[in-house]
Length: 632
Image 1: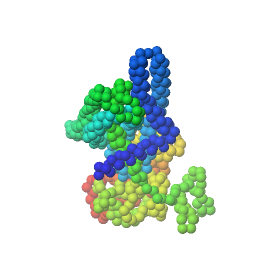
Image 2 (image 1 turned 90 degrees about the horizontal axis):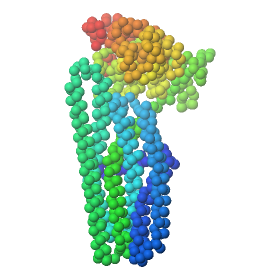
Image 3 (image 1 turned 180 degrees about the vertical axis):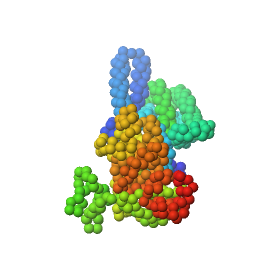
Image 4 (image 1 turned 45 degrees about the horizontal axis):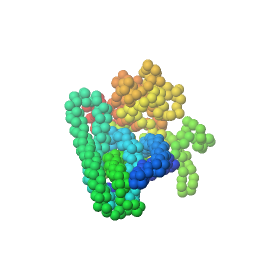
């Protein structure tokens, strides 16, 4: 299990860098080359120091400094050139890395958002919205730190360690073995302590997502909290989640903070041991074991001390980046989890097209007309037929369940002819809203059939199906922009005149005209500057301007006062004229005049008929009607 977990981490890192290379196929390799070049040059001074010390030793032994001065100056000049090149490569890769990092994050945000637009409604219904938001903010930020800081530092340190190790082996294998033993001890400690912090840093990211989800929930429900005096309970719940975050963060950082001083002190001790060992080798005249063939001397031991510090220091640098890498991997895991979510499947092939009618025949048109039709290609003979869009909707023996073994609808059959108004009545959880979700194919049925104009909706492209069905929800959603922008959301190519006409039809023009800037009034924070009734009216106008043949009104007037409802009802009656309408409502004013009223109970249709017929039956509808003026 642990091996699989490690393999998943490795494959995740490989995937991440493959994506970065795909985003920046030229710039990213240039950055890597510059980093390697910069790291390799940083290791060269040890060679120069050895040569200079050897020259000084020779000049001291010969008693002639002047003959060796030129060589030392030449070596220093060459070293300066290398340092200038190192500086140039450092500037180049740092500038490019800033572009790569921010560009990569931008592309990941785009990929996440694009994928989110393709996900089924079920994903949004079953995932905490704050946790999803945390993916765009916290997880992206951990990835930023990993790409911009940890990756270059690890690469620099890795190249430096390899280069310095090769130089150490070249000069003295005895002292190299001493350094290797010290490094092995450092690796063991890093694995134990670093592994502990990794686990808690991952937990920290998950808890942080939960905390953000909770805060978002509390902000959205602030009025409810105040009304029911739930402040203390909310604070207690927040404290509990915040305490979990504190404990995870404290434990992770405690491991991380312990690791740094331990490794630093091991490095210092190792430096002393190497110095002591080098001195002992010099005093004992032990033959030098190396690749270069140089004899043991001061020119070997002194540079070796600096190389030891450089070697251990770079290993320390790698260990310091472990936590950032772990957090980055945890962030990448959550980012890729969203990107890899299964998109909403759409196997439909029947499209909605504009047509004109000539001699009783429907002819497809490129330009916009007032007539729509379903374009149905037939694979059997290659022919194409057109069915006029009328709004005939029928359900046949439909079964549905959100979760296995928990049926929500059972054997539901109903029809709505073009222009009919069908109302759903029943207790909460009876299945009213579920039926409207199935009509839009937000969810797919388990059994049975749903036909639109005689076509199985599974054959219709989801985007075209939803374009042919307007919907007004109980919960209004307005977007940042002007009132006109929000109305035009229903039909992006609608003219200002069409939007105003739709507002007048519904009865919203009066209040919109009295707003500070009329139709140009800015809406922010889901219409916080409007009343609930005004927000609902705008959402109804939005559906009206879309002008679909089928309209679903899910508690569309539930948030509007009685006086406003009378105004809206007149507009709604005009809006519903000639359309197939499905109404979910508690108020009798919107149910009474329906052509068909369907009474649902636990996912089954128990009564159907018009208002007078159902009253005459004296069944459940009669009990609801006589028990209260609102169906609850």
